[in-house]
Image 1 (spheres, rainbow, N blue to C red):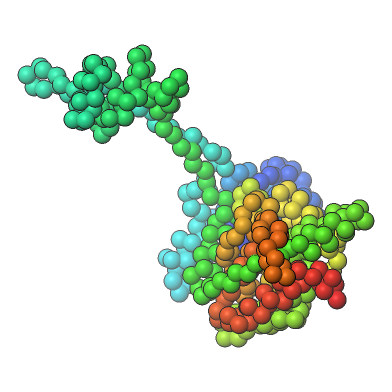
Image 2 (image 1 turned 180 degrees about the vertical axis):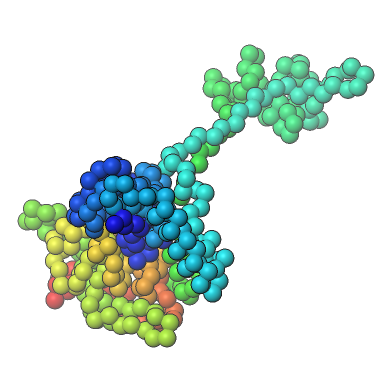
Length: 427
């Protein structure tokens, strides 16, 4: 008996899937547990195994193309089964299901494959080219005149230039002041500056929006426009943290980063401020007793947030090993749902890119996210003296429905105390 294999829902936020690779072709024998295909979700590319035995009779989504969750991915059955009849039956069942919905037309449009999924996932260059020509206007009586601004005409007369030999770059090819100032003999067709000619070709490229980018756009738009954000920024003296890290790395075979220290310090601070380790659930607020910190990792197509679980109980080295492993898996699209689900607080660190200060959008379901900037050499005052110091700025974005200003400020004060005295992180 033939079985319809539907596009699986491989993550809680997945609405569409793209087939990255088929490991079976039509006519191949398929056994339960065989690798059938690789499906690109909004966060990773995941292997999809067959749950059935039989022959692969039909492929509903070609490699590189996408389809909504629950649409026909493939048909597995016995050789000789009527594939067309099975598809007709499936379409009829789907139509009947749609008719039963309260708002069939709206929901139906969301569920149907849209035109962009039929385009291959590749960049399509589209370019336009225009050449700059002298602006000659022909009148009805056969005469012609050069379009030029009054100032351009004056400058041309002073230089003894014939306007007919000057390329115009103004509106409709009009000769303007810069054309006269930049004119050099024999430089028609481009704008000459010294010995260099500017290429006047215009162009652009377009590419389809990836599943990951769609989800980032949707989730962060929902967060930004539904959660009332407010922001708290604080400077932290990182001198002792720098010295502590140097001492740790001299003894440890695994190098510890400042980000590892920030994650561990946040875990310890959240333990003291449980109201920050919370979520808004509409009719109630959830205060989490466990501390799972999401760490934003940049990949080519967007941003992933794998989760360091029980971060308040792990060492710098354990956290560092986990984060590096997550970063590699994220770039290879090997993260699994268990890697990115369950965060109770999030950290986004752009310090390694030279960013001194920024604000981040809250990552649902968290109530807060911490934006971490780079460490900067800055004069500081110690014991009444101005001395060289190393300062890092952090900004806490808070959902005001859950966290008030005083609560967020108290959390930052504890975090500041711990990073300025790293030994307290481990107490």
